[in-house]
Image (cartoon, helix red, strand yellow):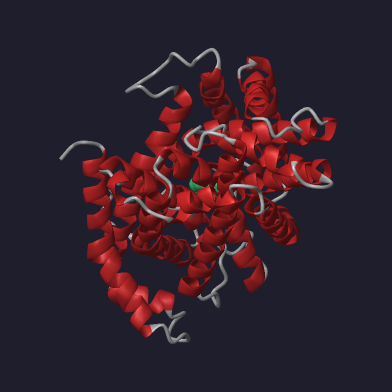
Amino acid sequence: MSSNRDGFTSTFGVLVATLGSAVGLGNIWKFPYMTGTNGGASFLVVYLLATLLVALPVMIAEIMLGRASRANAVTAFETLAPKSQKFWPVIGYMGLISAVLILAFYTGVAGWVFAYIFKSITGSIHSTDPASAKAAFGAMVSNPLQALFWQWVVLAWAGAIIMLGVSKGIEAAAKKLMPILFLLLVLLCVRSLTLPGAMEGVKFLFAPDFSKITASVMLTAVGLAFFKLSIGMGTMLTYGSYFRNEQNIPLTATRVMLADLSVSLLAGLAIFPAVFSFGFEPAAGPSLVFMTIPAVFASMPFGQFFMALFFILAAIAATGAILSILEVPVAMLSERFQFSRKQATLMSISVIGLFGVPATLSMSLTAGWTVFGLNPFDLFDYISSNILMPIGGILICLFVGWVYGLPQLQKQLSNQGQLNNGWIIKAVFMLVRYITPALILIIMLKGLGLI
Ligand code: PHE
């Protein structure tokens, strides 16, 4: 089975493809909106700590498990765990549920991005006025057929790409377009930071008010770190299974983490100065980016052109992330149940499309379908990011720290002794064995109000 698996073809390709999974709507949409609703700079501080102490070690461990087993998330644990321990593949099955829940709302948001490409070309969202930006966004998301139409466009598009296979489809698109997105974000930042009153936004993002940190804010930060680095649900494990033997895993993970973080910070710096300058509401929620970004573009020369370009690139970044999530069920169905990749893709998209309906209609018809006060859109996000992925993270840590063990970890992270990663490996081991799982557990229990 392992010999004919598709794989990434170069060290740079691995880095870019992994980045292609990590960078997406999580950076451009979710990070700014959650920073806005959770208090700004103090949230950023907690988020940074969560990234370093929780997400990075999980990411290294997860990629390592993928490469060591060269398999999907269920098979990986069957292969690596001792025969008597039948429990571990549960991590893979939980990942499958997360993948469906995330894609149910993520493809809906990607649909908004696709729609905004066209709206920026027709000029209908070209305005710096908060009231009209709000009306334009509201008109789109509250129209059930329009919202579903765009979600299905996204699903069909992603399905078509994934049928082409790993190295060709994902690597090629991601490689070419990431740098352009980055440059465009820099441009946006420059404009946003030179708007009148921009400093207010910078303060919001960088001057922390620690009284705003609560247990549930901490859980949200941990969940966001998992979501943004695509960990705790088998995506990074599946990608790790395509990594080359010569790849330096801790180094690649660290680079991906830093690049992902810089994209998020740029997005924050592009958005918050404008929020305060134009008089938007920082805690607006999921609509924040869709209202503010057009306003920044509307206030610069050639804004309409740049805005269309921005949404095209955001759509591509979202596609990279979607493909990587889809890869979890597709690899599992095709490797375990002998479906063709085509069949596996079609089955996955159909199930996601089904769950996508209530999620996407949460701004219209299903807004009142709440569980614990959360509509389907927010509920799917909450269950995946704040419950399933952190539990996945705990289990991955415990597996590597207590079952897989230090000698194996040393072999894997040093590429059979070829890399001089000595202290890094020990640090990763101490983190995944004790610190990281304990931190996640305490934050989860507190954040969920269980202790
Ligand atoms: N990390 C992606 C983003 O930021 C989303 C994602 C989550 C991808 C989980 C894979 C797995 O947009």
